[in-house]
Image (cartoon, helix red, strand yellow):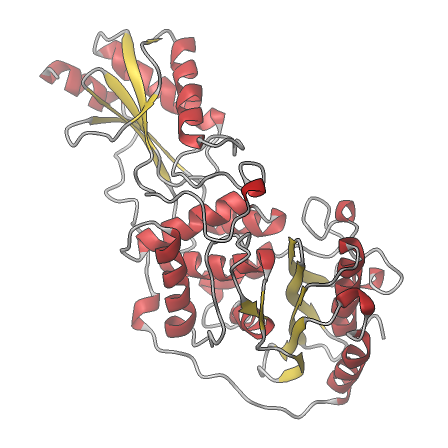
Amino acid sequence: MSPSVRRALLAAATAPIAGSILAGPSAFAADKAVPRATATELDPAEQKIADNLNTRTVDARLGSTLSGVVIDAESDKVVWGHDATTALMPASNTKLATSTAALTVLGPDHRFTTKVVYGDGTLTLVGGGDRTLTTGDLQALAKTAVAGLKSAGLTSVKVKVDDSLFPEPTLANGWNSGYYPDEVAPVRALVVDGHAVMDTSLDAGHVFAGLLTQQGVTVTGDVTHGVAGPGDVPVAQHRSGKLSGIVEHMLKVSDNNIAETLLRMTALGAGRQATFDNGAAVVRDVLSRRYGVSLENFEMYDGSGLSRATRIPARTLADILDLTTDPRYGHTLRYIAEGLPVAGEAGATLGPEWGRFDTADSKCAVGKVSAKTGTLTGAIALSGMTKAQDGRLKIFSFVENGSTANPGDIKDALDGLAATVNGCWA
């Protein structure tokens, strides 16, 4: 590459490329486990919750395999429990663990960077784990890249995509073949508009190539996979929104693809290779070493909860949510609580379009319960929080496995349990 071409391309870049995709606070390694309170005496309002739950969990819709717990957020007192440490398939409640680790390791202000570099007649689109990248973002990258090419007197290029940030495997242990690409795409570091395709990187590369063509640059040959060279010149970059907002959105709509990307990026942020296994190992380290959460019977194989091999007890899920209410961790973890769907909230997974909190028993809790949903064949979960009749915040988790009832009926039963914790269904 001639010096003049290099200078022209460098001048076209809109901002300096970040020194490392891993930039951001990583606080968990230095802290010690947090001791938990063990108070057990119930006040009359709590006793009523416990008595009602004892009655209402004996429900044919819930089957015979239920792990459940209710905790007082301020005292960490267990108000009620049923097989609370029994590990079951938690489905998308796994995203609570993924979010906790991502926010802790990367930090709420972390942003993901997608880059374009030039070398040897080729523009390379380099994925940085941004699952929120849009065609509009690629258009801006293309515009900047084209300006640099034209300044250097270049009118044609090849295009390749570099998604080497995430090594194989792209599919997790415990995923059914029917999951992908619609429920979750094979996990790669580059995607545009959340397209549900088997190779999201090549798909993004084709979109990018088309945008270059629209702006007068000829793209020669096919878009291919490759790795950016050490001497390639940075010509454009895009930075995502803050991780805090990404986590909130991911929890509201239960986005499996974002969750899997966050698991990989969390592994990188902790200095490990971006694999499923490493991501799950970092989640365990964060929960146990940083926050003192018991991981008895905890098994995790992906970030989204689609894995049918994952097992997490209700008590662990409740303890994770309990952390979000602790003032010591509020700056980092409050986005999890803020991202929980609210009963009756349209556009989220507890909205009326999903038939949630619309029965005679549960509709009284609309607007009063915030909770993460979870649904797989044979596994339905609901973990969240609500202010009970005693005015105190209660954390709850209910995980059901194996019921043969209609899934909608199971969800109605769980919604009723959440309304019981709130106390509006007395």
